[in-house]
Image 1 (cartoon, rainbow, N blue to C red):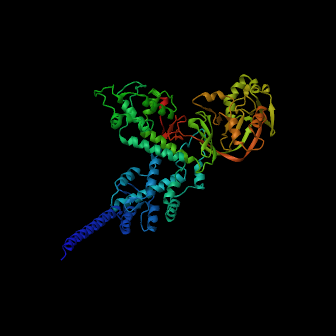
Image 2 (cartoon, rainbow, N blue to C red):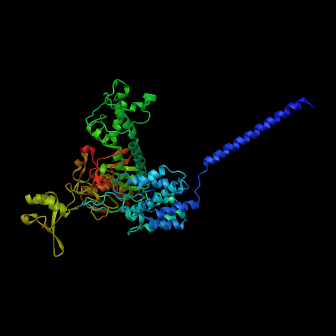
Image 3 (cartoon, rainbow, N blue to C red):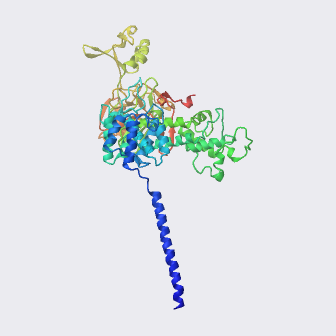
Length: 597
């Protein structure tokens, strides 16, 4: 036998054995991978067994403690489904369930009211989900119960803040625009809506439709999660009330200040690169009695920290001096859980708005004293405004500007006439003529002008004032040069003012409820662009000649009077403002404004 053949045969055997071993190894790894990627499966009969237990036998103590609120509607719903889950994929949450949990968290985060979602139990049970059918089905029925509660609140406009104010009634904008109905939406209707969305495979979409989808809302969601994470970290604590620092100072608590500003997003990533691997260590302040070397760089209030503090001050509309002064310290020391509450309540204010704002619309943020004319998602105009005083707060509203009035006259509301003007008229009846007012009474159904000197003003009072006051167009007219009308039951509108110097003030809650705008002629020019005959020159001419003119807009422009004490700007920064109207109700009580302490 050939010796070469004898040596080749063992080699082929070895090669074949190796190949077989390799194939076995590959199959083994494939089996392992398949087992890892295979989700545990809950048999329908098992799901039914435990679902029936929770819905029939233990509806008063789901997960050991929760009494279902909607069990009479839920049980028939699951019966029609043979008790198969809708929020659980065997032992895992579906995307719709994760989305619902996020919405429940952000809705309840402000502690404005008792929402009834049983969130502590839901959070606990979902965080420890395992391959236990009894636990998974408990989460399922809890989610359905919470969904119905949330849907009732959302569809019946129960999640709108800024309501119940005595000075102005608030029109519940979202109540009719989101549902198209005036009667209350029942739990049966919600269950039917839920069943239909499942049939169409649109459960994710249903959760989204019950929640504002505006970019402003979604940006606040990210900030809410940020502040909740800071609060849950356990590392936050306030700085001493008497701490004052500026660039060049060194202090034991500078590392903690640096950590706070990095968490809030004012000290950007990379700003600590000079510390390299020790960055995290140097955001931990040493204990009060520890022996430290303040000459070390981590204790220095340097220019980078001063710049971060300026960013914080800009976001809170404070003096941007880069120093830790008392006003800045007060806002820094607002606990992150309280800021999360404030953000969550402001998220609800987006529910006042229709889902589509319109490509071109006017947005007023009362808390920021600003108006923007938005066009295609960007601000075409940006100006200051004056809003209602604390006794006549400007209401949250959503309407459409229908008419512009150039060189307007002003029919003085009776309340203003008897409280503000009557004392001046008593002292000097000539005040009316000097300010362009006409005194009018009604005789046999016909208006007649009255000479103020013919009136015995000692007999006229707030209870007896049989007159109307109308102020003619002119420099003294309280409405200024232009009025922007959007019909509403509170006679609220935008207008110019005869006191433009008031726009120089930082706090501008000064009017009797209407919104005074800083640049009325420019706003009118933009709104009338394309209208034949209404160039800026023609607008100015009508005003300068005191020629009262009404112009009906062919395309009405949506106008939104909103109240946001927190929002996210175009650069992604959280802006925070003083709660001038004390509308930030948290746990049923107004939040404290740090800057007013």
